[in-house]
Length: 149
Image 1 (tube, helix red, strand yellow):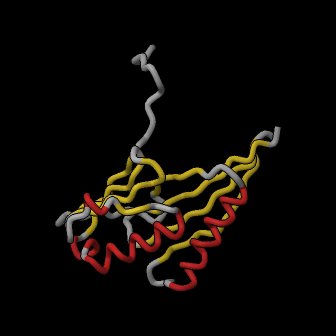
Image 2 (image 1 turned 90 degrees about the vertical axis):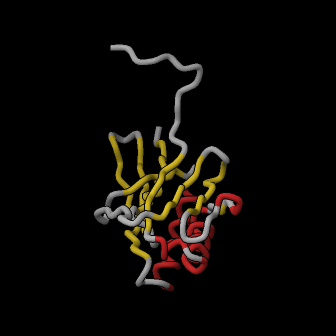
């Protein structure tokens, strides 16, 4: 079976999550921007923000973002439903995990943090990962692929 042909491989560019409108008021947006900005370096697209309706967080490029939208029946997800990010170095991984853990200490009522672990696969790959959720229905898994060969 063959699939379509592309000049370049398609890639994921965004995740969209629905929240209650109250989560996207000025206070909620400020909190979301503070956490996701500090931990992951995401930035608000201010020109796309609509009070109590929409918040778009740029994830380092214009073509990667988290789209948050208000809905009367917002998304809910089990704790470990997640979307993933990958960082280039172990130092970057450790720093992102440190920042997430610091937020978990400061705001335990809003931050669900699953501490970093690593798993080795066939002596070729050590996969480092941790999970964090902050005021969104889905958790974010952060990974670093440490190639051993």
